[in-house]
Length: 289
Image (cartoon, rainbow, N blue to C red; front, side, top):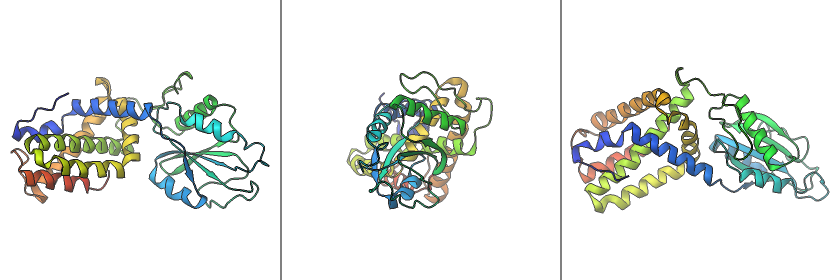
């Protein structure tokens, strides 16, 4: 869809709700279609990894062939990671040898045997997902059930495995604070994307620099952005737009305040090239909701 900019209308175009919801659906579909490979971690890297990824599944295993239950468990885990999931899970594996010399993971996870699997939601352990999985399909369904039991929204079918009950809040309820934050993050993401595009149309020479700033912000916030895209799929219908629209208004008011009070920019007027750069730079430096 081509973005048409009429100078003074750039701000309202960038915060257009319908456009943002279409972008949410597109980003969520991309997250489902292209799962990342399993990340190999050292024992001392697990805690920091979980702090960066709101939805994580960790396999604790050993390459030691003396661990008969470990043999082949990595392949099943990889197959489960490659499936389509209703949430942007990041799959990681931590290994050690010999198998009976289990590292101390502190409070992060308690490993009493190998292989072991753990599901983490927003950095916190949700549940032990069991030992050696029977199959990739079975393990993927186990992950979905654990997330659903913990109240995670958007539990849909794992591709080809039948439906998992959706346990999200009814559309008539006010969104939880976490949902509001995710909605605001997505609104900010798309505000930046459309501001970069609008400013690039008005000032072609500035496009490269603005795009670079935005892409750096995207990379730094990838896990949170993926989680927001998947969770906001529930708002992509007219019946469920109210929670998203409320977050959109809150984020728009926040950015308006930044422009007018902090930067002295009249958002109702066409920005200069310098103002475009200032807006993109400052918005990317705002704390993540």
